[in-house]
Every structure is written in structure tokens, then in C-alpha cells.
Length: 475
Image: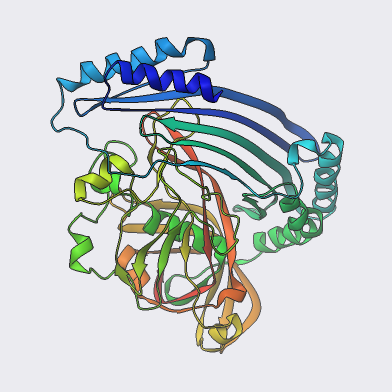
């Protein structure tokens, strides 16, 4: 294969392209789902092809093909597209420099998920369904597993040749219960950069009955009251708060306006790097870490991005002060920087664009018990149910599955349904006055982050600890 791809590079040089790269991806996925005891999804798929980029006179051309026997035609199409685009440019694209490497990377796994027999996987999901189905008051339930293997080869005119293999594995359960006025859901699960061991660690059957029981309890609970309250966000909710109000607004392509027509823009500007704007309180330090230095097995972990730039750990917010954007080679050069290694494409038939890696809230010094003990009255919130945020990522609203009452420094055991909190990004992060220590750290995978035109679905993750926020508005 290396020889075949070198022929492609030689063709790019013969055409006198300024730059060119080829990215080959072979992706295998498996989805298994059971609803109310019946199999509703049992699919395994494979996608294999190449994407080719060529730059000529500051213009980029891209072409993709699933036919590996006609790569010369694909190269020519990418080159012709670049030539045609050159006459329409408002400004020429410049790629920030990178080093050429010959390297490889592979997700460390213990058990290949595709080697586990299907009957064994179904037995686990059936056990989940039996446990949930026996709970009186349940109106519906589901259990699922999700697996992915991605083999990538990248090579370019600058001399890089990189091979990588990624795995992701996970699953979850969910249960619904109805009252006369609404339907409540509780859920549990996760997806990580790991093998089948991640599913075994989740121990889905052991959590199923408790999830179903709590769904029934929620259907009979009071609505969460409105007003201003102190809250604790658990990692299974905090991950989405980080994703939407820190991850997306710090993507440099959004800041420069290239995503404004669809995915939205950002309240940040390129000048904010130098102006030391306050993004949150001194307790808030957030990094974009593709290196997975803490062993969290986040879905945003890799050796090199889809432009051949090495994985990095970039501080986005340092003790409340905004420090950096997430960038790729083409947009980093616009602000005089080198790429932070976040040019990633979903599959082989799409262009790399700026995508989140593992956007992590760094640990503080509190234990969860200490954090709760300092409450007069408030709520501990878990698991997102719905959300909305404006195009510039300023005003947001999140609804959670459950609110647990905290009164006089203790969890009372009382739960509320339909908790909905809202705020403004920098004000909200500014209200954070405590973060738990690393013993409370959890990583939550987000396997379906959408962005770009055409739409690309990316796999990212967020590590965090429980964090406390003061005087948050509830509706």
C-alpha cells in the first residue's frame, strides 16, 4: 500500500501542486439495540475509501473515491478543482508548518469487540431488558451496544507517512415511565476509546433495575421549582455544558465565520487571545487534550490528526482566563499560529475541519461530601435530557433527567423531575466556586457531535469532576 500511495504523491508533484495529501480510511461499525425485549437493530457495516486534498496557488481542491484502482483520476479531479477555485479566491489559503514524520498509533485495548460472539452480546442486552421489564410502572425500556474500528493511513507531499488504528466501544440502558401529565426517563451508559472491556466495566445488567426504578419514582415526583439555586453538576451532565459552552465557541473556524451559515459562530474573536478576557472563575481550567495523558480513554484521543499534526494538550482556559483556540493548519495561519492538531474528518469522503478532542475540566481540591456540606439549599443535577444554545454560544438552557435535593449540607433523598437551568456562558462559568479532586474524575464520550456542510458526525469526549455553581436560574 505504501508504494501505491507514493505513486499518488509522485503524481501530485508532477502536477506541480503546492501541497497535497491522501488519507485512506477503513471503518467498521457495529450497532446492536433491543427495545422492550425485542431486537430493533443488529447491523455491521464497513466503509473504505480515500480522500485527496491538493493546494494550487492558495486554492484547495478535494476529491474522494471508494475505488482504489482509479486514484490517478481522483488526484486529477482534486487538482482541477483547485485550479478552478483559484480564480474565485478572496484570499489565498496558507497552511501552517508542521514536521514530517513516519509514525504509527493504536488504541490500547484488551478485548477486540468484533471478536466477541453476537450471542454473548445479545445475552447481556437481554439481561438488561429482563431487569428493567420486571419493574412495576415502566412503560418502555432499551439497551444497546456500539462498536467501531477505524484504520487510517495518511501521507503527504511533505514526507509524512502515518498509520493509525482506533477502537471505540460502549453501550447503555434507558427506561421510561409515564404519569398522567408526562413521561420521565432515566439512562446510564458510556462510549470510550477502548475494547469490549469498556462494556464489561459498565456492567449494564447490574444498573438496569435501579435505572428503571428511578424512572418510575421520577414520574411521581414534583416538578423542580423555579428561582435561583446553587447547584452541583455531575460529570454526566457537566460534559455537555463543557461541550456546548466551551468546546464549540473555542473552535477557530467558527470564530473566523466559516461555520456561521450552519453550525454557528462564536462570541469570541481572534483578538481575545491577547486581551486576557475572563471566561470563568479561578476554579475553571479547561484543556483540549488529544494525548489522553490521564488515561481517560476519551474518544478525542489520537496520535496524529487528519492533517498529520501530532496530538497536543492545549490550555483553552487557565484559571478563568481565555488562552487558546482549537485550530487546524489552514485557520491557524490566519492568526499567525501553528495548528493545534484538530483538523479531523469523519470518514474518508469529507474534508478535515476543526473538531474538538477531549475537552476536559481540570480537577480542583474538593471532595463531593465537602462540596455538599457547604450548601444551604440547592440541587445536584444528573444526565442531560434536552438543551439549546444560541448561534454565538452565549445564552443556553439545559434540562436534566433528575435533580437531587440538597438541604443544610446534606442530600435529603428527595428528587425532582424536569429540572431546567439557564444562563450566559461567561457568567455561568464565573459562578463556579468549587471543583472536585481527581478521585471523582469521570470521562464521558459524545459519539455524535455534528458540524460542517456536508454534515460530519464526530466522536469527542469530556473528562470532568463534579463542580459547584452559585445562584443559577431555574425555570
